Image 1 (tube, rainbow over the protein chains, first blue to last red):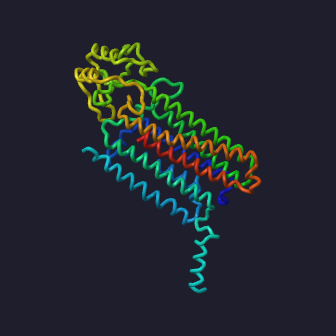
Image 2 (cartoon, each protein chain N blue to C red):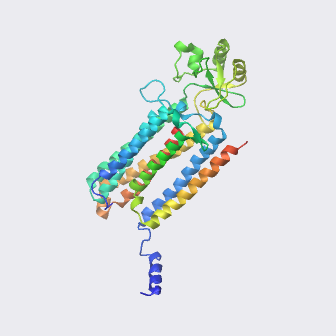
Image 3 (tube, rainbow over the protein chains, first blue to last red):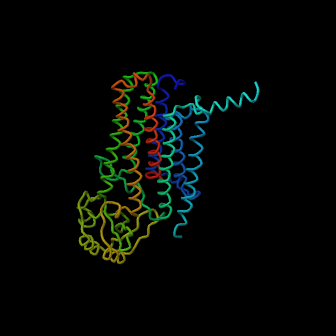
Length: 102
Length: 306
């Protein structure tokens, strides 16, 4: 972590994660009407939740787990399997789930 | 420079002595373990999604299930789990601070931040135990039909009633059963006595039944309070099974993380890493600990929010 001085960058990520979680909780409690429109099998609100989650996950992996500063070979070794296999698994299971016993 | 020389250099590059990934063995192995663990967790979460899409209309809505907050009465959806998330993020931050201090060979700061990380982990595991306790004890109670469908009691105003309110009346009863158990006979006679009560399936598109149908369902079925692997008052038993399995598997990761963190903390106290000349072990357990936080971010979204 020679790129960094002090600990301000840790607290910056902390505040980002905290604010995103706060936004998620507030949206989850009030559930604004205009976000409940259905698109591609779910509501806009759920898509917002998933996008915010991916942003949080990105900060944890990139900064806290330090992947941002790893070598390119390392990044590919970690990102390619997870970013190909997990979306594939999700897509195939959710699609099949809608057809089970139908 | 001939191309042959490049080739030899390339062979050397992957043939040992050099580190193409720029990471040491231990860190690399920790990362590959985490990668496989990430695939395991995504297997669980997508299997949860499969069941949820299969039973979409009657799947329990999490905010009607996890409504308790210590010391507060009534429905408090999301607050408790938000607090748990905050605790885990906070302990992730103290872990980065410990790793950061380790790189500067600051033993005192590593000790301090590792200790806070362990404390945060303990609080999280304790919070999860509290959540499980309330989930297992149950809240309002439900009717389980002979075909093992779960139905909830509603009144003419469309309000969900607890067994306590059904049996003791709206004035005397509590919105939550507070650990009081009710027999099928008690609930059935109260149901028969009030023609405005009816049963409805859980979930966002659950069907409602007439009073006569509801009484017949209860006569042929039974009452359920709380949740376990076989009966679940909140709805589909798969919901409880996945809740126990996914949060349990995650909780086991947190617990083992706390144990590993403690071993490393103890070694920091003994001065092991000071003598070794580096704090790379702190970095490795740090990766594991952040992973636990990372998984929770997804569990939080897919179990509680979506």
